[in-house]
Amino acid sequence: MACDCDYVFGKHDVTEEHYSNCSSLLNGRESKRNADGTLNLPNKNLSKMDVDFLYHLSIDTANFDLPAMFGDVKFVVMGGTKHRMREFACYIANILGLPQDPKPVNLTKASQRYAMYKVGPVLSVNHFIGIPSMTTVLQEVIKLMYYAKAKDPIFIRLGTSGGLGIPPGSVVISTFGLSGTLEKSFELPVLGVKRTWPSYLDKRLSEELVTAASEFKKFKTYAAASMGADDFYRGQGRLDGPLCDYSEADKMEYLNKLTSLGVRNIEMEVTAFAAITSEAGVRAGVACVTFVDRLEGDQVTIPKAVLNEWQKHPMFIVGAFIKKCVENRNKH
Image (tube, rainbow, N blue to C red; front, side, top):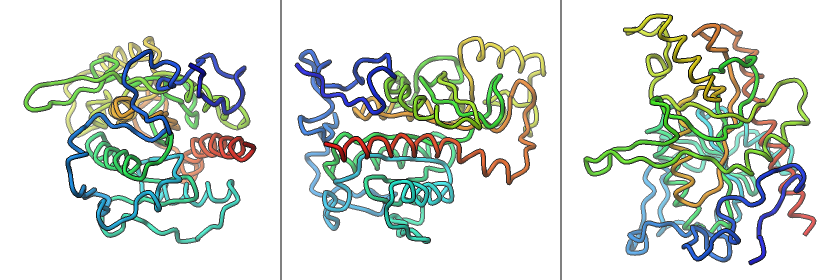
């Protein structure tokens, strides 16, 4: 079978010949994509529902023409704060040469929970902080893409993080997520039983995001493992939380072990984001800027104005990637 992969920056820039859900790799197994690129979600219960209410988006399948509204979406970009994702919506409109609205419309405003903005083929969505909040909106947006019959959507998470042995302001393109117990998986109790799913991201997408980053010389970019913590303080080995029952030596031993395993940053969503998108058959990547080198300290002391500039670094990389994808598609 011929490969249906598309190389964004050219075949010479990546070592992964195919992406993980490429049709040429199926070898008889069931695809998580249909032949036209739409999602083939493994939950067969969805087909039995007369109406599906995406509660946290304030959208449903009965009162909204989802294919007309979202069928052209090619990229879903997610990040923590509403402000950051509104800023990204304006930024991507600018670099794609699309009409800009100084006050873009929050399509989920009626839910009073999350914010979602659509700019051409790009959906910009916030997810707040931590796995429970992120996975709630992530799963509903995956269903939204399924019902909209969006073809080959790519999901990318923009984030902030603490670095390990790299300069603050650097960007880490995650290759996989490592849990707080140093496992390459996401764990979730289901029906009273702990279950785990692998937390790998699309390797070729990660490589092409690194290639996109090569044009930005003012900050460093690393392709590396990311740890996904379930807590900001003890879960990340900090000494400055309200509770701490370990020593600085214990902390440094743990952080140095993470570093020896190839981890270059610590954030709070990567394992679940990688696991859920992979299981749903969605290509996904993560790009996070670092605000502090955790081997040097726990607290973020950089001035807010500098942090605001730094958090644009992943935005620049993802914007360059999306722009190149759109340019390539317009040529054909």
